[in-house]
Image (cartoon, rainbow, N blue to C red; front, side, top):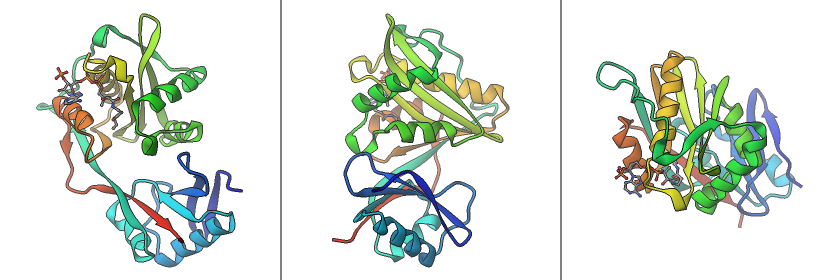
Amino acid sequence: MLTRETITVGHRRFRVSPWHAADGVALLSLPVDQSAPTADEVSRALEVVRSRGCSAVMTSALNEADAAAFVALGFVEDDRLHVLEHRFGPDTPPPGRNPAPGGARLRRGRRSDRTTALELDRRAFPEMWRLDAGGLADAMAATPSARFRIAEAGGVPVGYSVTGRGGTTGFLQRLATDPDHRRMGIGSGLVRDSLGWCARRGCERVLVNTQVTNTAALALYDTLGFTRLPDDLVVLSWSDT
Ligand SMILES: CC(C)(COP(=O)(O)OP(=O)(O)OC[C@H]1O[C@@H](n2cnc3c(N)ncnc32)[C@H](O)[C@@H]1OP(=O)(O)O)[C@@H](O)C(=O)NCCC(=O)NCCS
């Protein structure tokens, strides 16, 4: 039975959790600020995962250096993400705040709003990319400080965002608008809020990852001054069948 745990192989740590979208599949992720794992380390982590009864693994989004050891062991690319950057400077100042994006009001998300955010997430994303409660908690805890915002229209939740900050870099960790409220400015209002928060706290840039096929999100970030970095991230999968 797989539970959320941290596996230590030598000095290397791997985070393991059940993958929300299918039984018997483990989600394997690497904590930030570690060097790239070796094939031997990944292989030993895989042994542990198999001993927990899993016959398939998905990875978190990995850069090329981190992905190399997984690829050497037969992992294959399942999805690809562009990394986009918004740099604050004279040419790209933080966009002004929009207090009522698409007629919605932004408010602080509380712990009790996590269920609401998960329901929005379920409606907004295809199954592969949905977050479960553990994934949302991880997104909020991934950086030393984080901002959780809910957009409401007429008292009904219609969108949410999670933004993190570490040092002078901000991370737009999660963004979703309810499918019935799209193209009304809610998503861009939430991103403006994230950018403003990061800028006020001294960030030099904000990063976001999005699937290469996510034309809506890519168009939205383009309108708000994000540019694509040269290196993509990949999500890899492995199965012993
Ligand atoms: C991406 C997403 C958050 C956009 O939310 P939204 O509230 O519809 O966005 P906005 O109304 O603020 O759109 C602002 C601009 O972005 C662009 N845009 C948004 N959706 C678009 C689409 N489907 N096609 C093309 N451009 C789009 C447009 O330029 C739009 O301005 P316009 O409507 O005046 O043309 C929403 O589609 C969503 O929740 N998608 C699923 C979850 C997701 O992909 N999240 C981001 C992951 S990184």
